[in-house]
Length: 468
Ligand SMILES: *Cc1c(COP(=O)(O)O)cnc(C)c1O
Image (cartoon, rainbow, N blue to C red; front, top):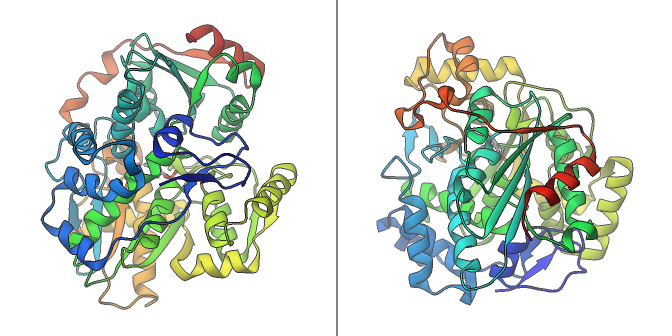
């Protein structure tokens, strides 16, 4: 299995190299050259498998011969053994039609642990025996940062520098990052938005002053291995609900488009997904793009769902490439146009191909609150605001009879409600306690560097803080 860049000008590389690299040298994102195929029999065979075994089987064709089957199994067992629920990603039924897929039973209480716990083990496995030291530079709107830090803290051949927009992540989210005092962990609060932070990270990957001295790697969902790890829970959930015999729909709270793109991958490789609902908050560039073809960035509006407060969704490029005929040169020109003007039109073929699988919805704060209350009143479930955005979209989709009523709709529950306890309290009047395993988060010492929203300052910090 080889990986190609969405911009067509980078050498094709294997899974190991794609995992360590993150972004491709031509500025594109890696995708498999061809989609592998899971037959109905392959999918039916997953019925008896636990999560770690499902992960090993679903990931095997993507890993190719970079790891043996036994090595891959060891890594998935180690990664998913750290989860607090035996099912790793349990399904919870809300009503006849609607289900939650709880993806927040990892160490930092958000779905990003599912991918990053595995990525930490993959990094370590691929670095062992080399003299490479990896410098991970990332930007986080909240949950990626803590999950990434937790996955690589104290790993000898890795340093991590994590940027977050100062004052725009919740106290729990910040403390989950800044209270990790491991020597290889460096938190930076920058003035500006998540998009500003992410633009700096992208710029650093193209900056020869940095790349000449450090081996950079990404943990944002531009990293292919992360997306691959997220394909697994679509299989795990669909099989439990009757796949391959029965189709399943998923509603996904979407920000950087990584999670829902993993659903697209699952469908491409053979999982019978009837529909993917791309649920956005009022920062609705993806909804506008998918419903009208207009992909135009505007200003980010802060909401109760900070992990979706994004205007530029990195992984959307992967979708445009895959549904637009996989023409790297054309896509590179389209993306360059967007980067210059902050606006672009999808081609007709991109729009119609995307619409075969995806529907989008824009959910405002009021509808989000109503969905939280509905889940509590109808099913006794407290859900976090991100999950509520997707649940609101799922309930509307069921009501609009867009889908055959026999098709179950799975809402991806991306964060534990206690991570956003104030919003849960405001919508439901209920207090959601942090699980005991988070311990004394609010008593622990924090360590964080504050920098201005200035690329040069961030670059100097990265070079000073990390080893080559
Ligand atoms: C990251 C995140 C999202 C958005 O996922 P993307 O892959 O960026 O689309 C949604 N909800 C929560 C809680 C998150 O942490």
